[in-house]
Structure formats: C-alpha cells, structure tokens
Image (cartoon, rainbow, N blue to C red; front, side):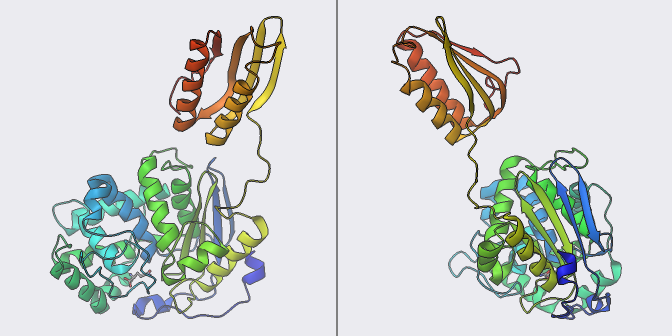
Length: 393
Ligand code: GLN
C-alpha cells in the first residue's frame, strides 16, 4: 500500500504552527498491531512526529474515566460539527463545543483532567498516553513552544468556552496543557499500539496492561467514527468505515474493533488537515481488504457443531462466541425440535466446552429458554467445564 502511494506529493505541511513546517515532507510509514499483540511495520514506522489531534480521543478517554459520561457531557457534546477542526463551534443553547475532536471541545476536555497545576495535569496525560503506547513518550519542546506563541485562535476558542460556562480552568492554564499534549512525540508504531489498545477493548495488546474499561473504549470509538476526521468524517465512514483520528503532525490512527489498530505517518496535509497519503493508504486498504466496520460478515458460522439423539439423550454441542444471532439459532434449533418424536422424551445435554464467550443478551435469552424447558418437564443438563456459560460474558 505504501508503494502504491509513495509518489503522491500532493498537500502541504501544516505551517500555522511554524515548527511543524520543518519536518521532512517525504516520510511515509505505517504500522499495524493485531489484538494478539503482533506488530507489522512498513516504511518510516519509527520516525518521530508530534501527535497533535490524535491525543484528543485519548484525553477524552481519561476525562471519561475520571468524570463519567454524564460528567463530561455537561462540558462537551457528541455531535459531528461538520466543520473544520479549528472552527468556532459552540452549541448555541448549551454553550458546549459540539464534540471533543474539534479544538474547542478538546481544550475543554483537556481542562477536565484532574491535577493541582498544569504540570501535574500534563504529566497525567503524558503518563496515560504512554501506557496506551506501551513506552514512555516525551514532548517535542520546540513544537510545543511554537504553538504556544502562535496559538491565538485556540486561546480565542478557550475564551468562548469560558464565557459559555463550560470551561473549568483559566484560558492560559487550559491552553498550555493542550498545546503540550499536542506536542507529545510518537511514531506510526506508537499510534498503531495506541489504536490497538482501543481495538482490544482498552487493553494494550502488546503489554497486556488494562488501560481503559470497555464501555469507555466504546464511547471513544463512537466519537472517533462520527467526528474523528472532522468535516471529512462522513465520507471517511463511507469509504473506510473505521473509527479514526488524524492530526496536523501528519499522523492517523485507525481502529478495527476486535481485530487491529493502524498507525500511519505522512506529513503533507489536505485542506481539511488530514494526511493526504495517510487517507489514501487507508482508503486503499479498505478497498482491497474489506476492513469496513459495517461490512457484512461473509460466512455466518453456526454455533451448533453437532446435534444428535442416542438412546434417551439429545446432545447439542456448541462452539465459539455466542452472540445474539448465535443464541437465536440455538434457541430456534432446540425449541424447533422440542416435540420431535425421537426427542420428546430425551434429556437435553448442552455441551458448551467449545464456547469461548457468551454475550450478556445471549446468556439471558438462553437461560430463560432452559428454564422454560425445565418447567415443561424436560431435563436439561449444561456441561460447562470452563465456566464460560456460567459467567455473564
Ligand atoms: N495542536 C493543533 C491545533 O490545535 C492540533 C490540530 C490538529 O491536529 N488537527 O491547532
């Protein structure tokens, strides 16, 4: 994929933060981490660059962990703004920035992170991003100071949020931490591991450290899908279909929940502030490999490996992950054959040794059906050596 797009020199380096214009524009690297923790890299996957806006979903996660969804929602909304990342975009009624991926929302979100002063708050953010990346990340001091002396528009956004009553710190305090968080240095490999942490339900797939709970991870991915690519988010959802976040440093992180995280670096940007070759590479990947989140699963695998009657025992052997549609199939099978002449008087043995996980809604439905069968007089035995079926997941 990199070879396919390497020759594309379209776009330009971000220069509104002067220091960002000093990077090598030709660098191009990509990395993918599977949820099993295996890393694949290509090109300049270990070239450092500043994370910029890709810090936003992670800092949002940190704020959610500290304040809960409702606590954060009082300060920043959930709606795609359909506007550029630096838009002056506050909801006219609530005064909240539309979402945490645009700058206004990200500055407010960053200010929600607890700590007694800017240094302590920044350190919490840096430490958190480091655990997501699986190594200690540092800051590009030049980029930080470069944005700090030129970030008047972001200060204006912070002032508006303050005036609207949704900002919890002083403008200078909030912006310093935000600029510094944007100047954290990462590589495409780091981004892949950070995205992999979101892909694996909040567990860093390389270190095994549980960083976030699953529910927060899901909130963050939802916002990344609807707002992560700013005013390109809609087209992105159609063409790529993965929750993703771009930064004006040239990085993109993309997440295939349950499967892998991708990090890409190429610093020339389109007019929306997204990496030109990064977007192109992910579009190619999506076109060639059908990684879209909403792709139709091609081969629905039956959860029923085997179903037979021997003597007075009817054995149904189950396997794999039992989600809603698998539970529906199991229930239809059992209930559908409940009155077969050869099964009517048989004991039903559900063998769940091969089941890896049962989703809560599936467990509830199956438990209710088993209870009803028992009430109707049938003996139902569940062999559950690993206890998978006994737990609610
Ligand atoms: N630090 C940058 C800014 O606030 C981040 C923007 C981005 O990466 N889209 O302008």
